[in-house]
Each structure stands twice: as C-alpha cells, then as structure tokens.
Image (cartoon, rainbow, N blue to C red):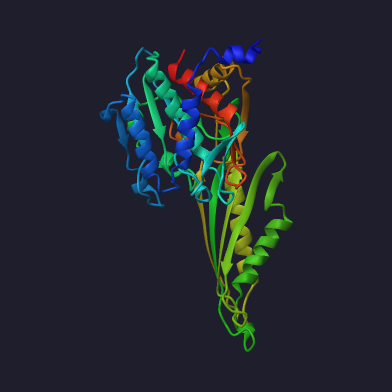
Length: 400
Ligand SMILES: [Zn+2]
C-alpha cells in the first residue's frame, strides 16, 4: 500500500534514474569558482540535445565585472511560454568550493558522496544546477504547458555572490517570481538572509630594532591586539547582542611580522560583520573602526609618534526579507505541499545569490535540494530530498 506522501509524489512523475545520473555527471565536472566553463558546456549541450534552440542560450559577461576575474559568465536560457502567465526564473549556482575539485561522486544507499575521502562532494551546488536542468528537461520531454521561463545558472557564488551581483538584468527577462535551489531539505523555503560587510584593516606601525631601540618603534601587532581585546571585552566580537539588536562579527585573518628582533611595522587584519538589521550592521562596522582608532592613538614611541590606520568596510551583500504573502513564497509553499512535503519557512544567516537578486529588484526564494555538511569532506547529498526538489522544480516551472 502506498503512503499518503507516496500517492502525492506520484502526482509528479519524473525520470528518477535520469535525474540521479545527471547529478552524478554534473558533480564529477571540475569547476571551482571562476573555472565554470566545463560545467557551462555540459549544461548547454544537454539543453541543445533536448531541443532548446541555440539562440535561446546565452552567456553573459559577469566575470568581466567580477573582482575575481574568471573564465566564463553566467549561463542564461530564455524560453517563451507554452501558455500565458508571468515569467518564472529558476536558478542555482554553478561553482563549487575548491575542496570539491577531484570529487568522485558515488551513489551509496540513500546518499551520494565522494569516493575520494579528501574532497567535498560538490552537491553545493551541482544538485541545485541539476534540479533546474531536470525541471526543464522533464517539461520538454513531456511537452508540459509552462509560462515564459528563464533558467539562470550563475557563476562565482562561493567567493562573493559575484555572478548574481553582476548579472546583466535585461537578460533575465523581467521575471515575476524567482526560485533558487541551494542547500538544505527539499521542504525548506528560505525567505530572507543576513547582510554582511567585509572589513579590511591595515595597521601601520613604526619599525625599529627590538633589542637595541624598541622604544623607537610602534608595534602594529600591539595596536591590533589592543583593538581586538577592546572589541572582545565590550561584546562587539563574536555573537553581538545589544538590547534587541543582534549581529555577528569575526576577525578571521591576521597577517604581519617577519622577525622577532624587529618591532612589527605592518599588520593586515581581515574580518566581517553581519546582521539582518542594516543599521546595526553599519554600527558594528563603526565600532570596529573606533576600536582600531583608539588603539592606534594609545601606542606611541619615545618621540610621540603613532602608527596609522587604513580601515575599509565594504558591503558584501545586503540583507533581505520577503513577505510571507509574496507570490514566490506562496507558490513555493504550494508546490512543496503538492509534492507531498511540509514547507518550512526559514531565514538564513549566510549570504545567498538571492541577496543580490532581491537587492536588484527580483524577490527570490531559496529552496533546498538535499545537500548536507557542505564545504567539508563529510558532504553528502540526500537522494530522496534531491529527487523531491526535482519534482518541486517541475511544478514551479509549470506554474498553476
Ligand atoms: Zn551554495
């Protein structure tokens, strides 16, 4: 006897073997951020084979605007509707983190994992890329009716959301609703995410011989340490809770110094601050700036000289929060329920391509596709969730 959820799943039939085979092939392609050409070519050839005209497929120039450079831009497919309705956009990023390079995906029971224990799998986000591809291949194979569709496979998500940040918007064709697949269970509907500033801090001290004339120097290491101690002591480093406002901050990298007998003249400090509240996020960055300014002023050499500070806070991505009644949220909830799932609305504390699309005027929901423990060698893809995401993708591409 079928369970209720199996009966409902059966309402959306997909070629499961084909979908699994597709994700295995996509994961096996090398393509860390900036090196996505081979995966672009793979998807392009699958689309051409399925009868998508070459003229509907394009690659934009986002990589030329990206500070990281890169070999290829975003892959975009624009299809006219086989029935009337607002345009829908389906998307998932193409790149993987470097730890996935060399991944050898194998199906093992309920999961796909890499048979090379030293690599991550790369289900983040080839699983999402495969959901989008599977959705359109199913639609074409069964000649299912659908509204105008845009398929969007951005590059360079993992290194700063650059594909989505620099996509040429007119090429996306003004979609009414956008659906992104990236991480988590197939029932997960992410309707908001935090925003982040990158902090690049350079402390210039004054070098001198540490044994002969230490009093003539200003130690950049001492200055940076005082600033960080100040932030830590006053609750501005790590989880930051001030009244009802919340955020996080982290100094992640410190570089400086090259000898014990020299008073260190330069330290580079890299960090980040995040908050869903953009005013508070700005305040967090300001607290960091002030702590470093105070520290610089507090360390002088024997002639009263101080070090110098170069402090840059750059917006990495803006936070966003979709209304639960917005059409893309409602449609996602409806599709998940129609495929037999129980939708779980959530907010992310990380950045997503959806941050930039939403900031650029395209409200975007992010759905799960079965990835677990991403960016680690334990990464695996839950096959049931992945196949469920494929069914949900078919429903969302078809529209109501
Ligand atoms: Zn991802």
